[in-house]
Image 1 (cartoon, rainbow, N blue to C red):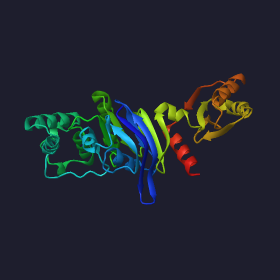
Image 2: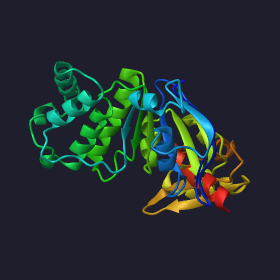
Image 3: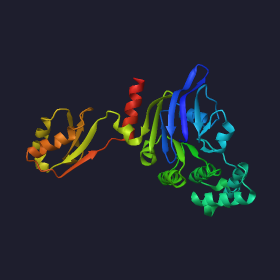
Image 4: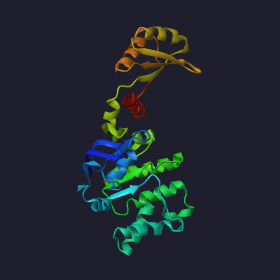
Length: 313
């Protein structure tokens, strides 16, 4: 277990930013920390990284209890949401400096910096000043900096914010490689829900400082009641018979697809998990040829919006 928090609370005067938060994470986990603006994501990271003391509750990172913050800092890596970089330093100099801060010898610091720059795809720009780096390159440099002390846990706060799709993909591939290749825990705070679906193994959804749900990605998406939908494709001259057959199935909403008269979009009311199967059987029983049937699976974005809407209603 690399992260353990129990009853973690952080107040700023009368405002409670994090309320009774209890979470766990293990080596190799990529934990997606989600929530709307003001939900407590950044405060949670600042508490777990010992930047802010908790008002109450306990936590341990890498097996080190919260009353030993200096030891925790030696075992974690952090990429804050807003990172500043010395533009006149080169990437190599920047990483060497931070490696030295963690007690590496001069020779070892040179090696660590060189290896990390290669790992994040910046080897060819090692001697370039950081002021010449693109935003995506600076983000990758920041991730490299978070790894100079060989941490047990890495916290990344909005690492893809402002990046183009190619830059986002590079960062997400690095997150996956860090967790699996180094067998460490990565906590990824982001507003980009597809990113979490793509790389995270665990998810924690916060709202108003409280945990709405926490657990493996698949369990979280299965645990929320959402509408399921699919697209049925039949011969154009069989759309009428297909719609009549579907009209006899309770709990369905039928829609057309603009420019595609042969497609029928079917939405199943929440709570009717077998509805799409029943719809397909009804069409086949009416002797309507089915040319295609594409089911749209549950997405984290749907679960997220559903749960946060319920929590604020």
